[in-house]
Image (cartoon, rainbow, N blue to C red; front, side, top):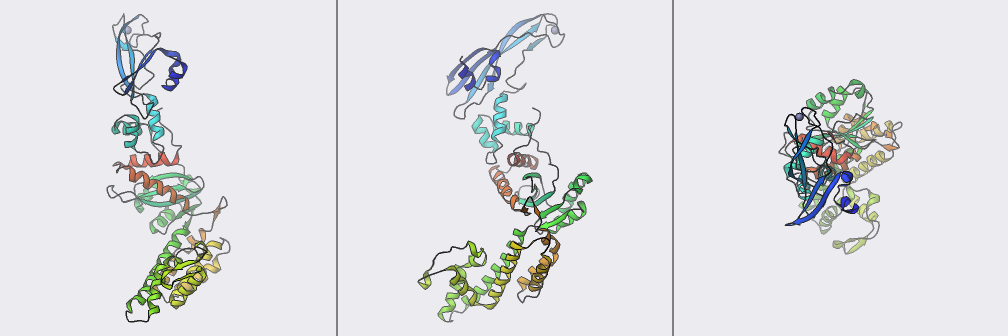
Amino acid sequence: MTYDTINILHLERFRDKIQLLETRLDKGTLIIELRFHKQEIICPVCHNMHIKFHSYQYKKIIHSISTHQKSIIRFHHRKYQCKQCHKIFYEHNPISDIYENISLYTKTSILNYLKDYNHTFTSAAIHYYVSIQTVINIFDRYVEAKRRKLPIVINIDEVFISRTHAYKYACVLFDFKGRKMIDLLPTRHKHYLIKYFSRIPKSELDQVEVVVMDMWTSYKEVVHLCMPKAKIAVDSFHLIRTLNEIIKRIRIDTMNKYKQHKSAPVHDDMYYYMLKKFHYFFLKNYEDIYDGKIHIRKMQAYWHKSDILHYLLSINDDLKEAYMLKEWYREFNLTAAYDTCDDELNKLVYQFRNHKLAGLRSFGKTLINWKDEIKNSFLVYDKRRISNGPIESVNNKIKTVIKTSNGIQSFNRLRNKIMYSINKDVPIKNK
Ligand SMILES: [Zn+2]
């Protein structure tokens, strides 16, 4: 056998040991006949050196070197017999673990393959010509993602896991600066979280400076209780989304007023049409809206976005006021700073709190309830304003793992798969 063949068969680790290496095809399967040189060996029972060759056992070991073809090593495994105590034993087999019929190379390949969050136990089984259960056994045996040490800035968020697990929502802990998952917990329930954090050493909890969260009161209580030295910050995107939902409601209510008047003049219909067609003007950042001529079919005209906005805001004073207040808040959110935001935040609270529309008043109440946490959301680490933004992409990956996992039943296995394929640096154990 040539140097190249040994490499192609991924047997380079055994190069010096090989006595016989032959390949053949048998019904589409590549059979690799393999025998090693005889080695000095002693009896494992009585440690006697007088031993004799007994026989070969032909052991079939799955050795998946290609995804196009099944390949099997037919290992000529020598048996010896001790001349003194008559014990029969095998020579050492470096290709596979004892009692297993899958090569160590194949196992490593499967574990590497599973690092991709798109890859599933099922697709691994197909790729490597083994059963799904074999893949699961390998994964369970070698992968156990440990909780990472708590960082200075923690993101906390929930992700929907499924209706089939004990809890619908899992809780994600994420390292804002280090961009790694700290842990995945089976639930976001308050009592579970308190128990979880109470097992973590106090010195570790004490060095957490900020916890970023959406406005979930349980998280707030847990942090107050378990990490009293940490500041809490609300995720500003979450807050803006809440405000946008309120504005959307106000727009729809306004729009529907003009729909009801069947006998109204024609231009009332136009109000309805415009508020429906250009709904996104109330949600999107104005600067992100298309800056060319926008076609308005019903008007048979092309307008610039500034004309459209002007039209939309001229329809109804309440809607206009709501829009302007939202824009003020949006501007504040984009430009304010931790040290100087108090005055403006207070003014905003006053405006919302005393607004005549109930939706905006309720947002004012939210601002009051979370005022300190909103201020803390302007904190900056590594020149980046803190937010739960980084956790969003992780949540999408988690959702992919869940969607493609066909409902991995064990939460622990699901957690390991998620942590393993998102963090990439989870060590392989027992190796
Ligand atoms: Zn012996």
